[in-house]
Amino acid sequence: MIAIDLLTEKGIDFKVQGNDAVIKCLNPEHDDSNPSMRVDKVTGVFHCFSCGFKGNVFTHFGAPATSLEIKIHKIKEKIEQKRAETVGIQLPDDRIMWDAPFRNIGKETLKIWQAFTWNVPKFEGRIIFPIRDITGKTVGLIGRLTTNTMIGENRPKYYIYPVGVQLPFCPAKPKLIQNRAILVEGMFDALNLWDNGLKNTVCCFGTKQMNWVKLSLLKMQGATGIDIMFDGDEAGRQAAQEIKGLAESMDMAVKIVKLKENQDPGNLTKEQIGEIKRVLYG
Image (cartoon, rainbow, N blue to C red; front, side, top):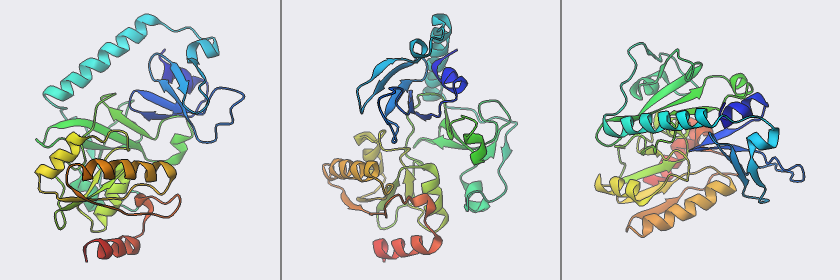
């Protein structure tokens, strides 16, 4: 058993972010309404970045941790990640291409983004997208649960394979508008804008994986500016300011598109997106 298996067994909701699972703090004296505890998905070491509570989930719940199983799991993860880095991922022959709208995204857009399903345990009940780097090599797969009831069964909404892979911008080669690209946080943020005419949108896969390498690749493709459209919450606003400074240090022109409180690009209507396109690009 590894840490995320124990969290699932205990009925604890978690969100996977990189090598960690983010959960509500296990400190009984901390009312953690905005989950702030990070747990290593394998070893179970945890730290609440709000109250400072630290420990290990196996010790916390009095559960046995098999060190051999943890070592084997880590070795498998490293092998999977190294394979993706060198030769890429071979898409499964038994995959079924997606052929219907999903979450208001048109089926033609989903076809272009090569969405599919795959009946294996890790990806069962998910719509899956291949993530390619700038060379066209498939470096990762991301699968989203197709129904919210499945999320209630303590399965994370998104599953990324290989575990721990650093995902590039998606798409890696955006169709720039006036030499500008739009940066959004999530996959379905990008799909919604792309589906409604803003085909210069790229997904960053959260705000923590941004670095100068990604922006440099974007600049090399002719992008002289970026429009940052992150979620309308404190985390999104803060991340937008940080990335604005990074991009400006690379002599890129930057605009921040401010969304309403708790609004995100994935929920914008066609009319709202059309208005944003008019304001940004005329």
